Image 1 (cartoon, one colour):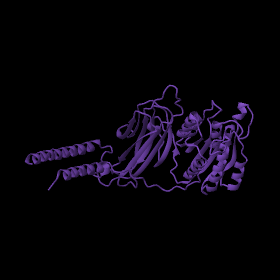
Image 2: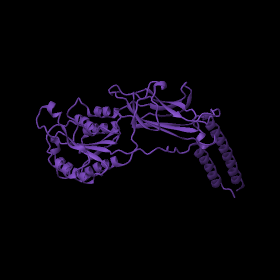
Image 3: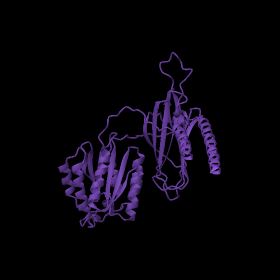
Image 4: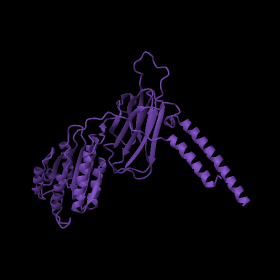
Length: 426
């Protein structure tokens, strides 16, 4: 006998099957494996006078940092080039101008000699000022060259003392260069101002912030960040969108970074052959305070301006990242030139738009970080393939949803009448 539970389960199964066919998982595009360059990491250590404070496991902050560094240096993966830079380690005087120049590379970025690096760290004594901004600029210079993953790990116990060179603005400028340099920050027993500044620095480059109260927390976290640099990752390529499609950069499949001003449109181009499918997604990071109510639009169109498909997302609260995507299958051409060895590609224009705005007190330059992912894969073999639905053919999706809703309504109405008749019989 058909029970109400069984019928309800069948109905749910039907709806799941229909919606599952409409929204297939996005597959990753096949790509040629690129030769991996050796990742680079620079540890930037605060050696200012405040590092004398004895509030980490009964020892000074400097002693805790040295112990953590020794443990980390013993465990650095062979495939990582590591360097060490200090800030506030050499100038003991009260001249602010001189104190704010006090940053120096203690150990060059390269293959690690553990004994030499440990010896260099052992000589450090808490001394001077806290020029975080200059130290970050110096570390970025230390990591220049090549396309390898780059990571700065900043360890400090206080906020920068060398404003107006705001280290948060410095981090944004570094990120705007598009060199895929991530800054992770660790605060030793931080106060509220230090915590806020270190969070801002990390968020500007897609890094992380960690509050540290104990020596083992410091060594564990620094070790994790160094290990993370050794993991194989897809390195984004810096690009620059244009104000119209005709001038836009032509992008191959891959991952790209850019900067987009508040409420700006930027254009990019992708070539798609008949029978291929374009899959694109974009993420925009709110790396500073923004007003509520914002959105991002990724729109694909032809060169003459006819819209093909779009993806959009919106929000109305605090956000770190907002993302959207689209898929477009280029149909096989029925009138292709039989004498042509290679079918003509269609140029698809991708427009990235955002509706972010900022409070009057927030700087709007440089623009917001944009990450654009492009994949071009073989498209579905048949027009009826599930991947076809919703990809610039919105009316197909509407028809299917209407039919599914109609069928569900009929089933649910029949179920209700059946249950009433059973109740009356009993």
